[in-house]
Amino acid sequence: MSTIKSSYLGNLRTESEHLQSGVKILTDAPVDNNGKGEAFSPTDLVASALGSCMVTIMGIVANRDSVSLEGLTWDVTKVMQASPRKISEIIVDFHWGNPVNDAAMIQKLKNAAKTCPVALSLDPEIKQTLKFDF
Image (cartoon, rainbow, N blue to C red):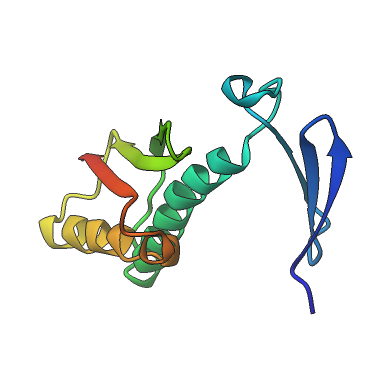
């Protein structure tokens, strides 16, 4: 059974529906690739998925050890190369103003991020740069 149902809306836009929840995501081509840039581009979603997956796996580890990740935020920067046009690097910059005071747990969380399913699924040619501000 499908997980996602998608359709082309015209004008370089798509709509995808997560069938289990009914949540929809729109994409638009970026301005530098003939689009209007009015929504996530497909490559933006790839970059966003990396950061979200990393934090989800960190959350699983934190929950298992009764640690709160409250206040953790992250910024994602996607770097494109021109020829062929593809993602060359994804930078994920984590910020946690009040991290847990446990060096071993901090290391476990960093390791969890690096081994999330999206990180392990991306082509090795895509550089994954992680910055942990905690």
